[in-house]
Structure formats: C-alpha cells, structure tokens
Length: 627
Image (cartoon, helix red, strand yellow):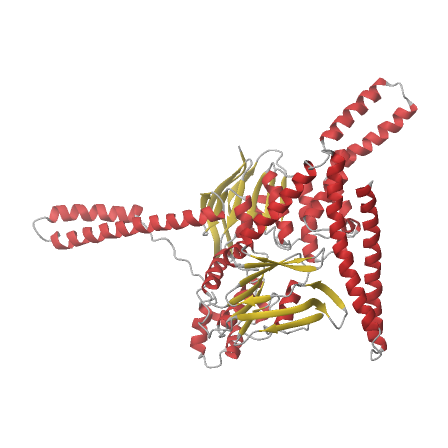
C-alpha cells in the first residue's frame, strides 16, 4: 500500500527549472535515502511530500488518516514551554487518558458500588497500559537522553536552547509523536556520534516509513534499504548507500556501453548511406536512411551525464621526521580561565598516521587541535611537534577566511604569483564558476566556505594536516572526492569529525575524548576495530548483568551495574581531587593579582561543589552495592 503518491511533479524558481516530471510513491515500512548534489531540490521535494510546498505542476496524494512528521534542516522551534512540556504535548492522548482516569477514580470514591464506573475505569486502565502510560516519563527521558540531553534539560524552556539544541528538541518531540511517515532533512546535524548511533537503532526498530535526506553516508548505510538519487530526475536503487554506489557505477558503465554500441551502429549506417546513395544500391541506402532518421527521432541514446565534481589534490611535499608529536603529562583546557577540560596520556605519534578524534559535542576536540597547533597553551604539561613539519589547518568555523574579501582575493593572498585567469581555473576545480569568484566570503553558504577553505589548504606545501569537521556542509560527491584525496595524501593527518564513513576509510588511530572521566583514550587501530571492541565490551557487560557468574539473581545483576557506576564515579573523583590540589598550589603563588585570585577561587569552589556531589553519589551507589 502506498502512503504517499506523487505524479509528474515539477518545480521552478524564476527561469531556473529545479526538477520536472518526477513521479514516486512511499510504501508502508519504507526506508528511503534521498540523495543528490546541493541545490538539486531534495529539501523542496521533502517539503512537497509534507504538504507545505506546492509543485508548479503535478499531483500528490496521501493515504487517508495519514500522520506525517517533518524535521527541517534548521528547526524554527519557538516555544516558551519547557522540553518536558513539549514532549508531554506530543503524547497528549496518554496524558488526557491519565486525567480521565484520575477524574473517574475521584468519582468512584464517592460512588464505590457503581458498576458502570468500575467497568469504565477498568477499560481505561487497560488502554492506558497498552499505550505505555505507566512508564511514559521514563520513555520521554529515554528519547531525550538518546538525543544527547541531560535529565536536567527537561526543565529548561525551549527559548534558552541554542539552534542545534532546538533542532534536537524538535526531533525528540517528533519521535514521541510516532507518525506514520517520518520525513527527516539532515537529522544527524547537531548530533554527536553517540546520539547518531542511538537514532540509527531507533529508526531500525521504527514501525512507520522513513524518508531521509542526509549527507551522512554511514548513517544512510545503517538506516535505509533504498536510495533515490535526484539528478534532477529520480533514479531509484535498492539497498543502502554503499550498495547504491556500486549499482550506480554499474548502471553508468552499462549506459555508456549501450551508447557506444549505438554510436558505432549509426556511424556504420551513415557510412553505408554515403557510399551507396548515388550508386546501384540507392534503394537500399534510402531505406536505411529512413530507418536511421526514425531511430534518431524516437530513440537516440544520450551518454550518461558526467557531472562536474571537485578535482584537486595535495602537493607532494618534503618528508617530515619520523616523530610527528610528543606530549608529556598534558591537560587540555584554558589556562587563563583556570578551566581544565581533560587529561591525555603521553603520546608519541609517528609519521603517516591518521588520527580520528571523536567525542561528545563541547568536550574539547577543537581545543585539542588548537593546543597541538600551538594556538593556545596546554592547561598543563608539554606538547612538542617534530622536525621538518609543514602544517596546514582546516578550521571548523573557517575563522581564517576574511568575510569582506572576495574568493579571488583569498586565493591571491595565498598564491600571489597566480594570474587572474589561473585563479579562475583553479577555483573552477572547487566548483566555483563565472562571477562566483567576485562574491565575498560573507555571502557564501556553509558548503561553499568549506570548498574555499579546502582550495586554500591545497595551495600549501604541507606534510601535516589538521582537519576540524571537513565534511560539514559538503554534498556527497564532494565528500567522496575529499576522502579519495586524503587517502592519497602521503603525510600525517589529525582529523576531528563526526563522519564515521570517513573515519572508517582513513583512521589508523582513534582518540576518544571521554566527557565522563575527563580523559583522552587512545586506541591503536581503525574505526571498525574500535567500534567492534567497544561493542564486545558492552555485550560482555550486558551478559554479566543479565546472567551474572555468581548467584544468578536480578539483585546480583543490579549490583554489577552499580559497580560499573562506582568505577566511573571513582575515576571522576580522582580527576577532580587532582585538579583541586593543583588549584590550591596556584592560590599559594604570592605573585597573583586580585583578579587572578578571584578567577582561580571561583573555579576552585565550582570544582569543590562537583567533588562533593560526586562523593554523595558514590555513597548512594555504594550503599546499594553493599546492601
């Protein structure tokens, strides 16, 4: 059964045709990934399927009583209510039922022997249980926690949330509403890897249909079983994103072979006609000419389109020393503000490695890169870079770009010997054409700024590259090109990214910033090995909890869980105690002025409060564990 059916849809903006004559249907239990280049019309099509954008021509039909949910790329979620109130609003039927049960219970107190009330109340309780009413608040907490919120965030008004938090809050509300069809536009924007993995698991179990626009290749691999590619027509493929890449390549090769065979046939026919039109076989030549003209009119093939793609690479540069980086007793943070973010083990990084740096949003991954680069000092310890290094840096916020400069000026500043014509040609490799070169940086989209930053980086002779979220805002073809370029790079890479597809392809080490223990954990191996090991640890812990080796009881399983929590709290307590001792030493410095004493003292009191809270939690869990 088709839930949404679209026929012959067309859309234009001014004189520019976005797409035309698109027909599709969304069946029950569909898992569809909608992909294509930036600006091809994916968001517009999704808005049409939701019903908030009208096509210029064509029709869309929705199944009767269809419940739709739509997540825009950037949520305009404005509400004075708290996150909990918004989530409860998504489950209004359950809470209305709870209210009705409370009212009937009060009536029954006054009329205890009225059978109709008793029967009605029993039916309501059964329905309430079926809807999960007795665990509804824990279900809300599970959804918001999965998307990266803390329990305390439930009491915060939406007006206090950042743009990314509002998008996550709206996604939480959308999932709680349980629509028949979910239309998701870049749902992994603003999610860290842990939240992405949670959402993947949620969507795998989701009973409705899902249509996803995403630039996250790994996410598409995990969540969809069909790919619709907008070209701007729609080409449909079965399977996930990796399967789509193989099928598309095979399809293009097949189309090219058919095209070349037809071109060969046309050339032979034209040659025969030319040689025989005025000779003894003129009748046969005229007959062939009529058939050829009819074939060209009705069914001439066109070659598969070769779309314009980014085309660049990094220069072969001098070889660096074998040791790229050494750290000794380093803590990452902001020394002037007396804020420590996390500590890291002593590291010796070898030439040719690709380090993938991962961790929650706000944990300090960018601060780590900037500390190693020397842009900010470590909170404590020593960081030293190796010999013969030429360093390049791709900043997430592109703060090295000048907002009032044109693209031409940005390239001229980094390659003063290039002539204007050469600069145009060079920028063309990064998909900038015509008058694009005279645009100022301030008017560029996120993806365009990313491509400009890559263009500047590729001009430099580098053998060590720091990359902070380089695939943000890049369309899928550009991500594939960047991945291939980095795979060919013969230097060393430090890569902060949420792009697991890129990590799996490139990383030789994983550095995890653990926000709980406030430590950097180093794993020697690729991303697939890292996730496999982490999965094995989790499964082992779950087996111990479910089937403990010693007295097989639920109580023992609970103790095992509490023991794990105890270990986490003990690690955090130890870290806080170390930091507090360091602050006490700083406060003894007689050279500190009053402002510095005030800053250190404020941080000291904050950490002492955290320590007291951690010790209180430890006591509570210890009592449970030993009870």
